[in-house]
Structures are given as structure tokens and as C-alpha cells.
Image (cartoon, helix red, strand yellow):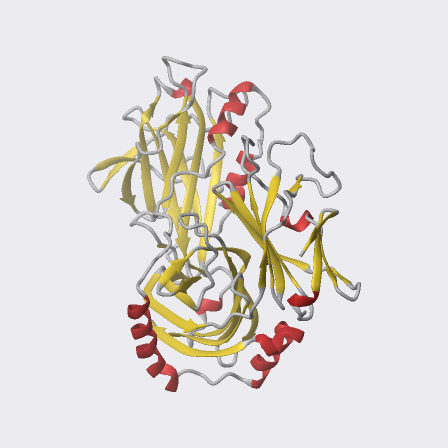
Length: 466
């Protein structure tokens, strides 16, 4: 489904003005059927109590296997001496999460942990979940972003256990202008959905020059006290094996209907009906104005083998106003969504580093080979440099007077660190984030260094003394 919307946003079959209007309005995905996950902030004391209670579960958790230990050591490489062992576990719904090791310099943190699920469904390729890592400093939440996020390093099918690493960076608290160093890492998960699938079909309406929406007048019957389309009149594919469109067109009530079918293994995730219709129409009072989103105007009726979706705003009289119609399905084929309460908080110890504020103003342009001034309005000014044995993080702000927020492509920004003996080190890109006219980019060293021996850092050819 994400690819389905991405294709539309990139301008699939939208060469003329009307399609350009559609593309502009589809820059964001369709209305969500679930509220976005918000950052959670919980007092440290409560989390530590929960962690202590969870630690009692350790007797039932699997001991870390020698092979997993080897994977962790390989991932840490020469930075292994700076890693600390962190122990703690939590369990719910038969799934145990157990922390193993952490590596942090206060700006970028990696937490290694295992997940054990005897049923194995958590490890299915199409399992979705909201497992995330947050940080605490002195009992208060610390904003985090950047890094690689969640990555599975190894999986043992015999024990149904996976080894994961979660990588994320911390950035400035914009209220205090401080860079808090986290002292605890917090793993949380509230739900997971094994076998989650997406399917969809997109049609252009009569208002588009290449209309492909079926406009048939179809036969109807009655089910569950409602007028619905009879099945199998003009089937349409939804690019999935489990769901399909059986009939779509105008019913005997003059409204457009879509009859969809689902296989027995389909379990809805967000509501009783796994299907959703989004459709947009021209405003008859302003044909060249913004499209009117009619997606909220849909009536769902359960029918044999599926659902009948009635669109009251799309009638035989208004069909010429329709620009775009999308039929979507979000569902599970492995039992549906499972909710629980997984909370795990462990202490982390940061490797000490040094902070440097440039003595002179340094502004970087967006292109690595184009030193400022570049004429672009989104240049970035170096605010502070943090150098640790593990890596270097550079904080940026928007230069005074610039209209647009600062931004640099972290992967395209060249970074080198010059040591006192003349050695020039080139760390690897490790993550970045940009928000509220600020941002940061982090790079990681292959092997630890002595931050006190660094004499300068070079960013896109600009050498900054340390």
C-alpha cells in the first residue's frame, strides 16, 4: 500500500493540470485509521520499578547463546571495550525482551537485546510492531532521532530467538539549549501484528481524461437489511491473494457501490472492516480549485464473503466530478493485532568526550563540493562539535537571516578528523536529524581514538581548529 501511494505522489499518470492538482493533494498519505504513535514520557522512578519487577522474569529468559555473544562482539568491533553489560528483561503475551549490552558516547547509543517468541510469529517478515528506544536523563525524557533504528543481527529458529540492535541519537533540548547525556535507555512495545498485509486498487474518474473507473449500472440485492451489489458482476484485482473487488458500479439506489471479498484467514486490524475507500471530487462551485475529499462519506455493510461499500456522495448525477478513487485493505493473515505491555529500562554509561564551539563562524552549503556562499537559502552553520572516543557529532543551526531551515545530506557531507601526529581519520556516517531550524550529523570511528589528540575537524573542505 505504501508503494501504491508513493507511485501516486510521484505523479503516476498525471501529465495535465487536473492530475497535477491530484498529485499536490496526495503529497501526504490517506487519512490514517490509527492515531500516530506519540513520544512517551514516564517518570524514571516508575520505569525503574517496572524494570525491577521485570528483572524477576530473568529466571525464565533464555541465557545469551555463545553465537549471539560473538555477533555482538563482531558488531562492536574495536569499540567493544567501551560497551557495558546491561541486564534486564520484560515479558508479556509470551514474548520476552532481554537487554544485553550498550554502547554510547551520550550522543549516539546502540542497545543490543534479544527477543524470544516461542510461537515464532514475531519474526515473520510481514510482522509490524511499535518497538522503539527512548532515553532518560536525570529522570526526564530526552528527544531521540537519527541512527539506523531497529536492526536484526541474528536469528535462531531452534530457540525462536532474535538478536537485535537499536541505534538512535539524542539532540538538543530546544527549550534549554542543552545537549543532555542520557543515563538510561528505555525499550517499549505496545503491540505487534504478525502477517500484516496491504492491498489496493486505484481508478481515475470521469473528471480525468483517462477515466478507467467502471461506471456500470449493476444489479442489486438485499443483505443485512441494506441494498447491496450482487457479487461477481465485474471483478477487479487488488494485487493480493486474500482480497479482491467482486463488483463495482452504480446500484439501483443511484449511489456508487463497491463489493469486496476476503478470504477466511483475513483478520481486520483497526476496525471490523479491513477495507477503506478514499475518493476525491471536483468542487462544482470551483472546478479548478482544490479537490474535495469525500473519503469520510462511506457506508459499510457486511455481506456474504466480504463487504459492500456505499459512496453516497458519488451518484449517477455527480459522477462527472470524480477525479480519483482508491480501494484499500489493511489486514492480517496470522491472527491479527496483539496488544501487550513491554517496558524495559536499563542504565547506560557514556564514554567521555569533549565539546568545542568554533571560534569563527563556519557555514556549510548543501553541496559537498560547493563552499559557501552558494546562494542557497538552506545553508547550515556549525554550532558545536562533540568528539568522543567513538565518534564525532556536529550540531548545526540556521544562519541568522536565512529564510529556510538549515539542512545537509549527512551521507553526502564529508568529514575528517586530523590528529596531533598528522593522521587524518575519515569516520563513517552514523545518522542525522533536522528539526526546528536545527540539526545534527553523527559519524562513527572504526576504532576508538583519544579525543584530546584531535587538533581539527574538516567538514566539506572547511577545517575547524579544535
